[in-house]
Image (cartoon, rainbow, N blue to C red):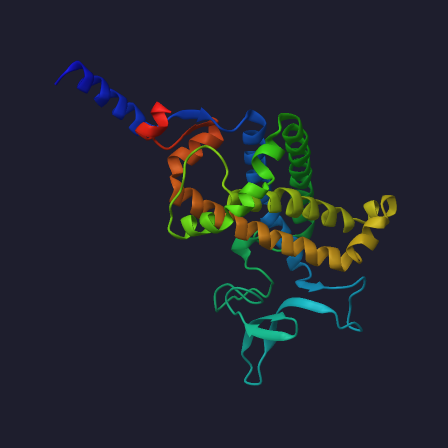
Length: 287
């Protein structure tokens, strides 16, 4: 083997590993993990609070004299004496025994919206659920404020989150690549990531914070205009629930994509900030 061949072999070896770049700054990593922890406790304690009255409405009022329920989880007794759990969505009921409305062992069923394994605490305790929920809600909101300000200052919001027209034009190709599990590890967010992150960070996060505030009687006294914006406390509660459902869906898709794209590389980037890109081709290297 000649010296030139040896140099080319070493060059090819280096190119095959790809470059390691600094992808995520400290503020991004800290807020990411703060949200992950806070949202875990917010979800479980939020379902505990929901179970105190497992029904959602559209409008400013609720009760027996109103017909504005959009979702309800309850147990009902059939004519033969058996009891089943039901979930009613826009007036149409579905039997959901074992999950929603009625859950637990057959000899000791629990009549509640969400099952015990999905709530914090596992037993019905509204006051403890509210304490946990409000505690982590402040951490969640503070992390969002820190992320938003730091992203504006560093340019992360404009550079990495908001999609450009060039990104939008690349949307069909990005969808095709994702459907075929072809991922490009160049350290930049693709258009689908930008759209997803922008939707969650700039729409769902502010909505879930503001609707949470709207449900507080104390904040209603200070900011009564929130009730007008969201159409009343009951509508705000429904929007809050839908935002939670959107976050759960995003989390599941996010975890799936991390596993599909290479979990070790993705986890290292959000823990240490360092990310390994795709290997360069000889043409890219020479250019």
